[in-house]
Length: 195
Length: 324
Ligand SMILES: Nc1ncnc2c1ncn2[C@@H]1O[C@H](COP(=O)(O)OP(=O)(O)OP(=O)(O)O)[C@@H](O)[C@H]1O
Ligand SMILES: [Mg+2]
Image (cartoon, rainbow over all chains, first blue to last red; front, top):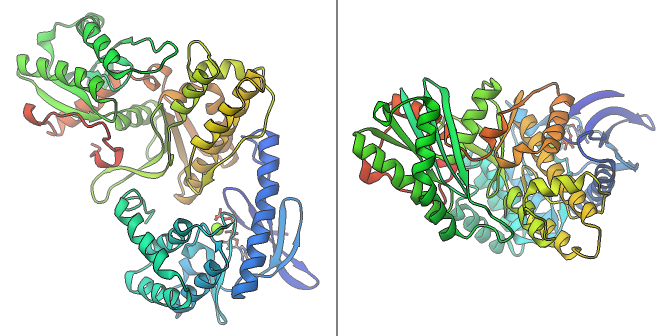
């Protein structure tokens, strides 16, 4: 297995399953915390991520298929393409991304880290990955934070296209957009973007 | 430049004297919190009583006369209003009498900056963990040079959380360090763990542990609340280090005196072969030297304030303060 990426809580390897190329996302042990905390966190997060991925894929289709779940490992279909954050001269349909997020939110799947680092673009469209911080919840605040993260990360015009598609697709989108405006007014988040 | 710095944001009245970045004196007197925590007016009264003696002992330690001072700094905030005012008035009195330039200093910036100097860092991520604050910081130049908050607590600071729990189980003295001592004998009980990206929250953990008070062994509760809260801080910090491609981590603030926390953060850095460091404990506790240290640089860059503009601000956020 070839190491594809090393994150704060997981390592992603390229592998193959039944002859198809796949990735394995392994939550490795963290030496800094005691085993009881570490083991429990890695187990519950792996399960939670699997649940969110399955539910999201069911409602929007734009999530890699899960091929297997180990104690600390998720095996999933490998999506070929380029991370949205690295996309240069490729047309990206931000409306489609907005629509996909709306479908997830309609099913109460909140992504938790909805940024251009967690979207893969290829010929067939935009694919959402990394459900490591996701949750299944009807919290309007959490849904608004998904929008806010993306809003802070991309150009204003592109975001506007995404947001308008989002609100067309989602029934109670006004609630979410009003909350987004609220959060931005609160200020705390205003000065905190990484960009 | 020979600069005096006065710190009084909480239970410590501290006076430091610095010259060309070198600390000549760092004296302090503390209000005894006992088992009832900080009562602002009582603390302020104690500070007033102690202020002249602490200032004099700092001058003696540095071996200078008050007339030799060339600049004054004081903590503008964040902190407890009545406490801050004692230091502010003392500083303004000295500045007025000796006709010296005066600089209002952000307390959190001072902790971070003295740590950067002591640790020999260039551009570190700073984890600032004190009573009222828990923040992950990095200097950013836009729109002005300041400590940008990458992540922080959604509710209470980790220090206040540990102190509040110590009071809940009637430890004496009611400090995080007393919790740490008991924790050495403890076994783990599962507790709520709340991290969201680079942010975290402690009130759920405090409530949960407090409800178990009297039902589980104190040693086990101390061990578990400490291991859980520190693991949360480490996780958020590690994410910040990787996201910003940083190679250095410094920890500062009162809770940075914890050996367990430092051991855990060192482990995070070791995994990624990053540099880890911290200041001596005397600079992690509240102190006047760090205020003098930052004030000297501000004054040298011409960033002083007219006396009538020298206010205090209880919620002076670190990202509002210009860093020199
Ligand atoms: N299904 C997939 N197909 C192709 N590449 C993938 C897939 N899943 C993950 N990757 C690659 O692995 C990287 C890390 O994956 P992911 O974001 O899920 O892990 P993570 O540990 O949460 O990362 P981080 O902490 O950096 O956000 C992605 O940026 C992507 O390059
Ligand atoms: Mg990711």
